[in-house]
Image (cartoon, rainbow, N blue to C red; front, side, top):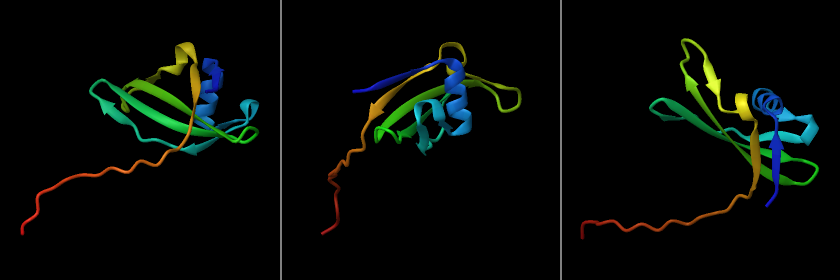
Length: 98
């Protein structure tokens, strides 16, 4: 499994600009913000064209849309971890009338 370590500045640029030339990353899939009372969490998937690999970047934020947001990468950067898409089949059982 590959990992890319980004500084806070590189992460900020990647997150806001939807790509990063330095690491050849392009936004592939943008996640939705999940609300967890005080915090919000988001996971984006990026594609690295030079290697054909996909990487996941998790971001958290706190604050308010009325004031300002504080993002998790502002203080320590982030690690992008290699991921792959898998197909899962889920079987469920349910009661039906006869």
